[in-house]
Length: 240
Ligand code: NAP
Image: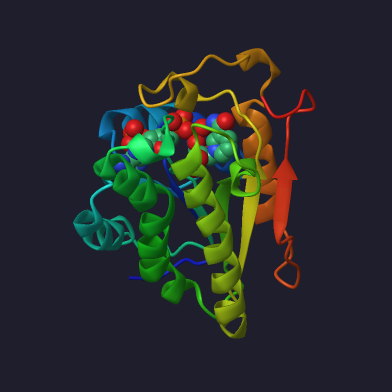
């Protein structure tokens, strides 16, 4: 099978929120798409909605919270002749509550989703991107640099993700792989509707998912001899 490298993006967490808006923005710009999330139905709906019928789109339901699923799922997703030139590790979860009364399984879930699954996805995908100027964009949060009470595990997971990204960038530089973070303030997405985030916030003052998609497209479109190591994108209204 003929392998295509240029202008293919793999986006995790593409069924809703930032990932969904990003898939649409990349398709509008002519990128081929490899998409994953748990909800196959939502991914199928998204593919129907993509206006640019010239782009190739493949998707797969993969549960990133189960470490045993990931390697096989990613290999199957990429078994279509498309190799990503850009990998966007976007899928992530949040949980609010006191740090020390947090159930161990919730702690492990956050770490698996926001850190370990990204290590696992990179382990499968990055070796195929080597020596062609590939780019890994990890979607992080300003919680990686600031501490918010009730968000302890989330802060820890995103701080570790930022460190993971720098380690990846240094190790893979010799293989012409670039890695960066998009560090976000609050974004009006379905994350704020999840059962595990038990707080009220002013959704209207948050960034829109389309603004974030636009920034991801900008990062992905850099020439291969350049790397913006981090962009911090905040709503002008402030933290929340
Ligand atoms: P969202 O609206 O809740 O979307 C999360 C995405 O991740 C969905 O597509 C979801 O799809 C997928 N996902 C969740 N659990 C999954 C699992 N077990 N396996 C595979 N996919 C899973 O969240 P979002 O706001 O777009 O967040 C995207 C990223 O931005 C996250 O990394 C988040 O930490 C970061 N971020 C968000 C904000 C914000 O204010 N929203 C701020 C800073 C950073 P399925 O349910 O179909 O699996």
